[in-house]
Length: 167
Image (cartoon, rainbow, N blue to C red; front, side, top):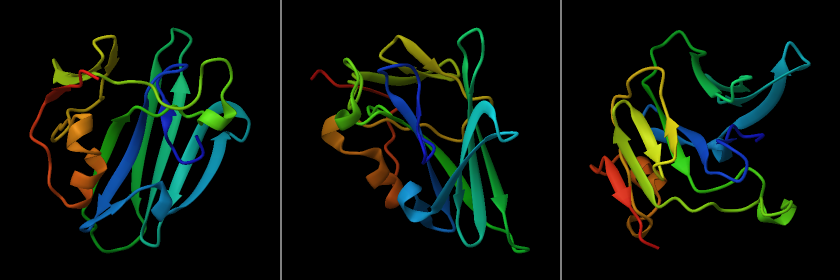
């Protein structure tokens, strides 16, 4: 979408970036966003988050074989070092909001299982999210534990490497 959230498949869950820069958590609501297509016309969209001292580019592309690739590129716009940590969240939200639904698409898609296993995030045991580099950490929360963004904002991490919601 315009803010960099990527729906993994039609009617599926999404992955969404959040970024901690120098002790502050940033989401799409905290930055100026802009969008563009590769070379101005190719169907490879990107969303860019711009802040005073840094920039994050989120680029998504789908391959002919059906593989979805999302790349994140952080740029420090200052001469001073910045401490930054990228979080990529698996969220139950579809990119298409409910008020723009078409057919059965739009709104929320249930996630009942999330686990880090064998170098990938397994979602509902049907979909793998495979990072190109090993993450520094992984955390999962159930619905009852609240949104993981709250933990990230407080700089406290859930220690679970998997979770299951029976609802």
